[in-house]
Length: 414
Image 1 (cartoon, rainbow, N blue to C red):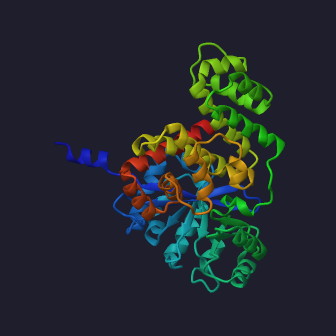
Image 2: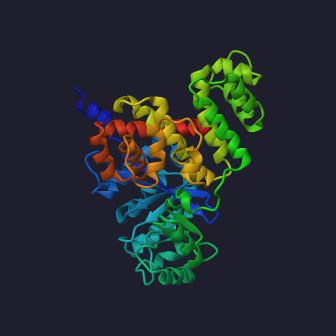
Image 3: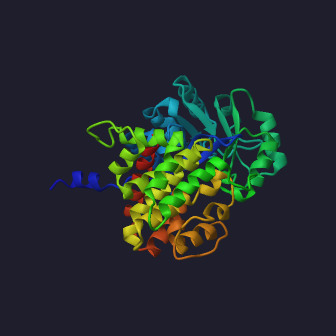
């Protein structure tokens, strides 16, 4: 019996999540990868070295682009990981080696930093502060990260003033509210890590612009009990971006058509009503999100696909849950309150109440599903475990579904 082969085949892959790192204009420049080594550990691995090794193995198999959308990956680095130089297994143009606060600035560590810089790797110092014992590592750092919830705004500003330079960028981490982001900007930070940009109620716009309204009208048209295909065709034909996306999609290798598709109606007939509705959902998110942070549009697609995959296991309609996931970030994409987004859309009551209630902490029949997708996305492993149990979902299934959703979103967005 090949027990070794069986063990390798059944070895669980790490649970990867990502947290965005944004510029001042809220463009994603990278992600910190959050991981849990296996399903038995709710909080993250008790052995960070082993977990990071597993993460590196997984990234080499899945590909950094699939996980990080072609942007930088910030990966935690312990003392031993730095000395073993295991990060040399990853491409230097896509990785930031994030040195934890427990790593001493001893000669071996300094030499490892020198070698990383010779290999064109970027280095970040995590949880840095004034009088930090890792000050000898600052000359090698491309990023210095400050936990704004551990220090006062005055201390944050003093740290920025002391260490910011043309080569070293200061990053505020654990920025979860709009007020914290504004305070961090005022302190001089150039980069921000957290989910503050997903809180639209504090954003400027209070209405939906005309071009955005056209896309919402398209969503309204395909949400009707009887889809008016002529009206749908007219809405698509009068939007050059949607026309282009539809024809490019149908003529791509993904669709395997025998002859070129040249008209909107021809494409609609080829897709059929069900697939047409699904394509419109995806295309609308991509178009609406193209001028906004790309993380929001991609996360909407990941959420939609994840909800669709778990729907049969939780006794829900796939289309309904797909919409819950897809629309759950629409308020942040459009920078309007969720009430403005759902107004007039022909959504079932559970979907509408969940989208409205999720922003206010209210509970509906769909709340456990919504909370599961948010927890899995954010790497909140204890919540993932509890919510999966509540929904009678196995943790390996949840992990597979989320990984598949990430790969799918990356493919359709490409």
